[in-house]
Each structure stands twice: as structure tokens, then as C-alpha cells.
Length: 145
Figure 1: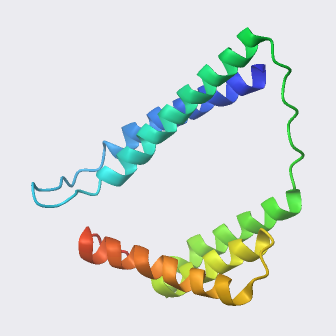
Figure 2 (figure 1 turned 60 degrees about the vertical axis):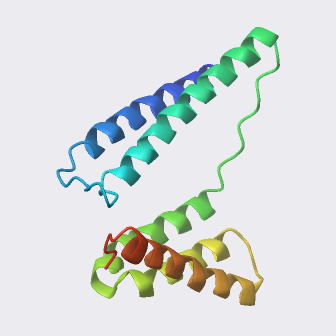
């Protein structure tokens, strides 16, 4: 349970630091549009809330005398493949572009996590980034590249 508290504190601190960084974004939105700070601030708030939730949940388990949950073994192969794919994405996205590289990332992550429904996986890999692109570029007026 001590580890759960440590993770909760880490998530809260990370969320607060993320919120501080998000507040350093200088461009403000107008009354008609959402500014570029809105999404990062939302993520930071959710990070802090999830850390608080984990701390409260851990405290309640301790008070109820419940046994400590065993940690799952990390699948380092999956972790390494995901990390390599994200590294490739970070390098390739500014060069190749969001609409080309993001479907590759989504499909790669789907494949790494074990799905082998190829038609569905390809459809999701294409439609999800396309919907995100349309939402950001046209609804929010934030260019993704």
C-alpha cells in the first residue's frame, strides 16, 4: 500500500507541474474560440484528480484492512515495442505529418497489444486520427499539421 501512496503523490505532483506548464502557454483564446491552454489544463486537472482518487482509495483499503494487491509483472517486450513506436512517431510526425504517421502509430499500438482483427484495426487506425484531425482543425481551429 505504501507504493500506491507513492504513485498517488507522484501523479499529483506531475499533474501540478503539468498545470504550471500549461499556464505558461501565452496564447489565450477569445470568447468565441477555445485557446490552446484548454486541453492541457484539462489533462492536468484530470491527472491531479486521479492521483487524489488513488490516495483516497488506498487509504480506504488500509482502513478496511483489505489485503494488499499484488503488482502485475511488467511485460517488457510490449513496453519496449510501444516505447520504440512512440519514439518513431515523435521523430516522424513533424517530418511526414499528422495524417500519415498517426494511423501508423494507432495501428502499431493495436497490433502490439495483440489485436489481430485486421479490417477493424485498419478502419479504426484511419478513422480515429481523421476524426481527431477534423475536430481540431475545423471545430477547435487548432492546426495539427
